[in-house]
Image (cartoon, rainbow, N blue to C red; front, side, top):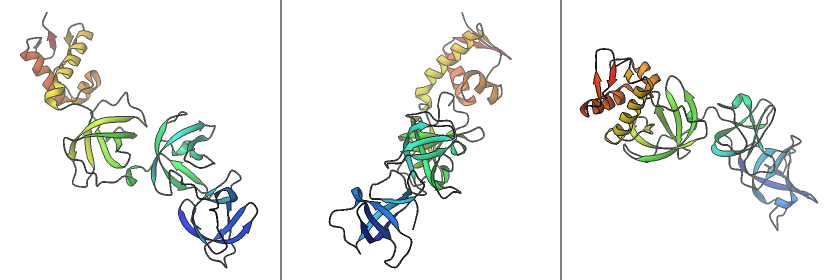
Length: 278
């Protein structure tokens, strides 16, 4: 019998509180389908499609209800409760699905919605995981460069960027230089596709196209200059790390914004600083 999957099993025996199922009539390993879920008119020998999981007493049990997640799949589930050793997720069955702390990429709170997969732990129990999502996402999205998409944040990486599941199913990433400091795991964002890679994965951005974003960036640079009392102690020749840390912009975006401010004669640029023109 396949824990965590749909399968067709035969009715071996009928009892007052349900029916017992097995793969074959002669099998000795049986699983109970509770009476309230037995289809009307069911008889011994009939086949019923069920999902197998474990009840609150850790006993294998069948259900005709449809859980929101199956073994190896992906689904967005709501956090119903947070306990001492993990969280419990609503997945459409009577028993909530356990999400261990060790399988979280970030701590969750009740009512959060998180993208998870289903696996069998060492104790042969079904559990949820927020990890390993990357390998399960599809790379055959219908999107092209310039398309606007919606995606859910599922992981942060200092080296690569912010990983996003577009439509909760397609693999995408925000670049490391993009400011994602206000985002958290589970957030749904609107973004624009900047590139479809040869392997089908998407590069996306929350920023507008450069010609639309430049006014906002220019205003942001002016605000930073004001914070430095009108004299920014570096120019667009500074390292990308310094520019990112101080302004939240990539070096290219910073250079475009400084260029706009210079043309508007709102700043002057010296060898080592950018000064506001009063």
